[in-house]
Length: 397
Image (cartoon, rainbow, N blue to C red; front, side, top):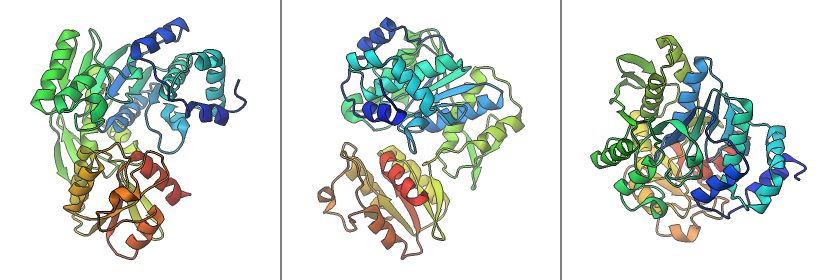
């Protein structure tokens, strides 16, 4: 048995052994872990999953529902991954669940993510949430979250990420994402590429599931005001890419036949704040922006948001994980901005030696920031959710 929640978390984060999805399903069944007793909403896509989860949670909360959310990776604390009505699971609740299943967690050699999913399932079930919104870890079809029996699937978009495990082209990636669709349910998406839509439609028809494609929103001004289904709306967050995520959450709300007034919808959207998504952080009299873009599609979406500020002089402080296409992201950013490259404390990080061909390389984020602050340029930190999580702690604490 673990004595403290931190001891349990330390153990969980060291576990790398993985079983197949079918083997994991059998383990959960054998130990009577419920996967079909709640109204699950399953969310996948290349970018925007966590934001969509959060917007939909806010809308359902506005209607009076008790909502569990499961997201990854965490930005601030491990507990943030598993929340009910925005409140993270407590140390006591986490420790109780892990110790309840301690013996077979150890004997079955569950991986970190498998234990996370187990905790989520047990916590939401015992708390009897009205809805559980679950973000996929990677892909969907073979992801460990795909043990759930969902009533609705959401697919945000299809882009290039996790290529070694999901596929070499967008259609192969779309096939993996569409694998979360369940029999006789529905799937809603903001995907626009014809080939990807065709694959999602094929999966939906195979599962006898209704398919809904979101209408294109009309974006009018900046700060971000937009119209969806003739409903005028405004975003609290400054990221332009959040418009599509809001529209997807709204379509989910309409499908679920949850009734809200336009004022309640507007209040829910304005209330929603998702850290690390073009988040503005005051620092020594300046404003820095941190954004979790970690693939080429995310970088392009970030550029559109920066463009909306009509700022010509921008410094990007960038770091990434080695398994990402970081050279492609850097090349795209260097077309438009001054890019400061650095590293951070993660064993999977890009090393300084990998960046020596570039002009501005710094041994640490602190060095890069110190240099950037000597200018009057807009400063944006990006490249990895893990990197900006590290940066955020340094800037705020």
